[in-house]
Length: 96
Image (cartoon, rainbow, N blue to C red; front, side):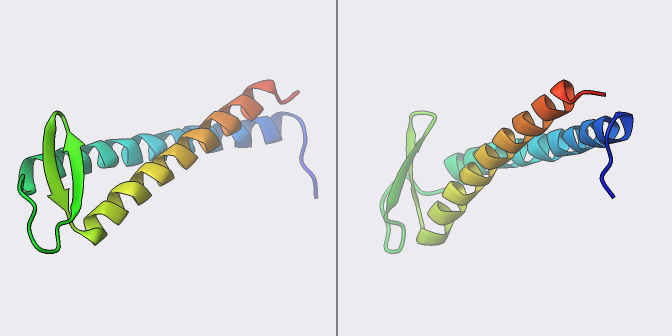
């Protein structure tokens, strides 16, 4: 059964709010992870730590898993931001 009108618009608004909150949480988690790596990872290359990452003018060395996690969290954040913007715009411009 297709829903239109106010019910659909309300559902889109609710989904946009929930998605916005989730997006904010993931964004803060990503920033926290980068700051954590910047403060707690070695500044000299060691065996197994081959990926150099510059975080606030400080170069730290990450393992393959840490590097992959950093990229994955950034990619998920970008996708969530895009999804949130799309959902919010759809909710705003859906005819009631």
